[in-house]
Image (tube, rainbow, N blue to C red; front, side, top):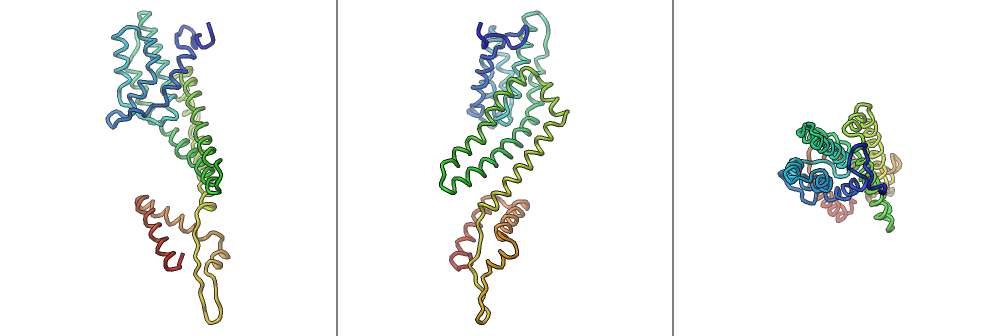
Length: 280
């Protein structure tokens, strides 16, 4: 037998080839997203090759499909952390049935329900709160200079970690089961990585403010025969003072509940009026 046909666990039947099918099927997780059960169809689709192999009996297969069509929702980039654990538990259930033993099938649904929130918290912190911000900062900076590397690096910085998380998360969670995720939480690894991600994301956001927010005034104050450029005074106090003040002002309004679209249109209108009257 080839390596992909050898069981990954002693006494098991799931092979590396089976996990590879699950990996590729995890990408259209939100292809059938619905507001009743959200990602349930995509999650069940990713497990379909495993379920067909484990349950040749039609009734057992129907019960397994019904189990995995329940409500499900998590961050797509780390969904395989849950998928791998479910594969391991379904394999244990199938083995118990073949050997005449017993297995608590409700524990599979309980596992999914227990892991959805924590795994989503990890995924949102890293992929939406960190990698996306870093990718946008690097990509936008290069794109503003007319470089095609901006688009390329944006896709690479975000998607390479996502692919690695899907691939290794599936193998680790299948081999380690629930204990893998529990050990990461108990050891404080998840909290430490999340804090590091927040710090890194804030550094990138700060760099984006200084390099991409442009705000200046051409106003000149004339007193008698003397003229003073208002922008030169601001620059002497603190370079890029106006962009910094604008950023903190927008942040303060967002904290008070002002909608993003409202703030965006207000900035556009203020910019047009300011340019028309020569203030900006």
